[in-house]
Length: 155
Ligand SMILES: [Zn+2]
Ligand SMILES: [Zn+2]
Image 1 (tube, rainbow, N blue to C red):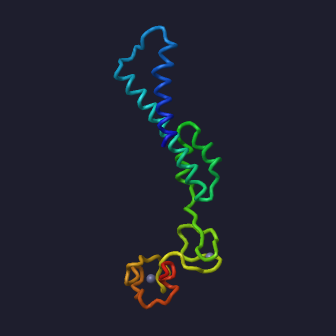
Image 2: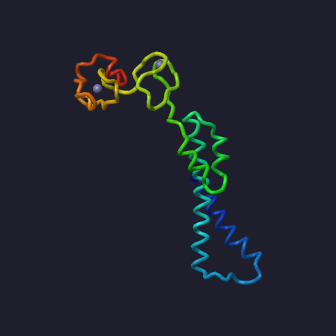
Image 3: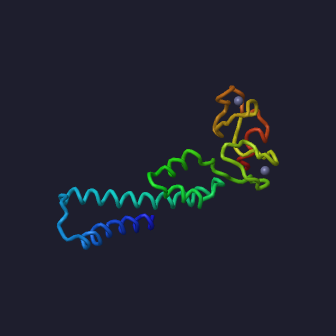
């Protein structure tokens, strides 16, 4: 956030203070149009910095290289940013039982079979902990034994 504000301020400073100093004749553009252009350039620079900050936080959580992706994102045209959102991996968490890294889509730990998400004991698709019956197969969830339903929320 601070970086983004600084980038915005710096761009504004550059356009308002540095550029006119190099100019010997007044700008042919009307002041309102110039003002609009400068604001949008500043906003674009701020957006870039915000994007970089976001990726440097977000990429490691997904097991991706933050440095590599930040280089991609600074490439012109914002193509890197689009690619990042298309290609990014699901957020990684770790198994509460054995610490194995697991993706957000997993229901069970691949190493110790600890149940991570509540799921139906019959069809093993995701359920909500407040559901009484499976929304996919109609199975009575209350009849499931642990770990079929409740192990992800002990106590
Ligand atoms: Zn585990
Ligand atoms: Zn089911």
